[in-house]
Image: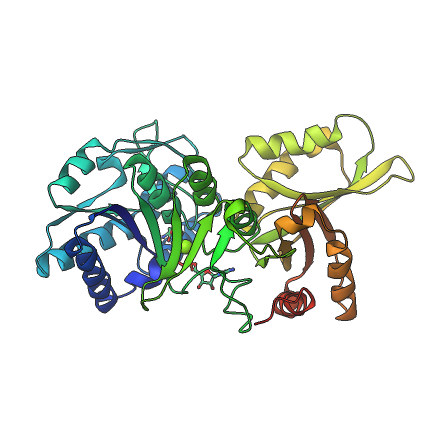
Length: 404
Ligand code: ADP
Ligand code: ASP
Ligand code: MG
């Protein structure tokens, strides 16, 4: 007997048949004697539609109203799954974030979970009731609904597992585990039996959306045992574990890509102290996260500054920089959202040289131009034209010997 959190993503609850399939999986766990909390996402496509409606009405919409709209997808699936469970004889009830409550910080649209009140859920789970919890949402300090950023139900599940002191957090999705790269674009990708928290964290943060970055961060911090597995097939998935638990560590363990990027170039910036602060300060105040940054050397007292942000933040970033023009006195601002970031990740990079040069040589051989480069201890990322995304990922997958 164990206490488990089972999380089902959008494709796993995409229609009523799939919701019935989820219900019968949950019933099996209940029949095995487990105490179960389920976290659900919105039906596949729903959140995209809700986000699009907000954007169509106003590109710079009020984030609190955005949250009011996009949190509704999960409310629907909690109720439907509770009904489906009751229908097959399982005691269940739905819980919205504000009812538990799942408290978050004030960052509407990309809030972080601050705390979860677990006592009542535990009491009911012990009495045999399944808690069906809405992922992706919580209650902000202003007493309004907040959402956790795209893919946030993973984080809801891990945070709930920590709050309930669950034995496991199983993330059910439409692939049967974590692969060396997205199996949808590289059919020869290999499934990993185990992956280290740190590698999973880095892969998620550079675009492997199989787990939301924050969920991995939390799992690592709270020591939650996470497994990624298929909601359609019965086979073991991928365990996210400590580095020491992995016997044979590869130098590169995975490749990720993100098309969710935009590049901004500020041309003709005066080259003097305080300029970076004058540009990045207002962006940070506007809630825009900056990722890769390059600054050229200046020849004539002025320089160009190029950096990347999430594509969704582009309108806000442009508006912010236009407003800062009086102070920064740059010549022009160029935006390009036809870019993708490709990253190779592996803890083996700490001790092995040559990973970056293999990457550059492989991309060169395919005629792919590198626009920006950034590195960390266990990662190398490059920004390239979006059209070359798949070609680059496949070529690198082969170059690092990852093909199945
Ligand atoms: P869910 O709706 O269940 O949360 P997501 O679409 O958010 O599912 O995440 C699962 C998807 O992540 C897969 O369908 C796959 O295309 C993608 N993916 C990206 N990188 C990887 C990877 N390295 N391993 C497995 N899946 C990956
Ligand atoms: N429904 C939300 C999204 O699509 C949260 C999630 O699925 O994890 O981003
Ligand atoms: Mg997801």
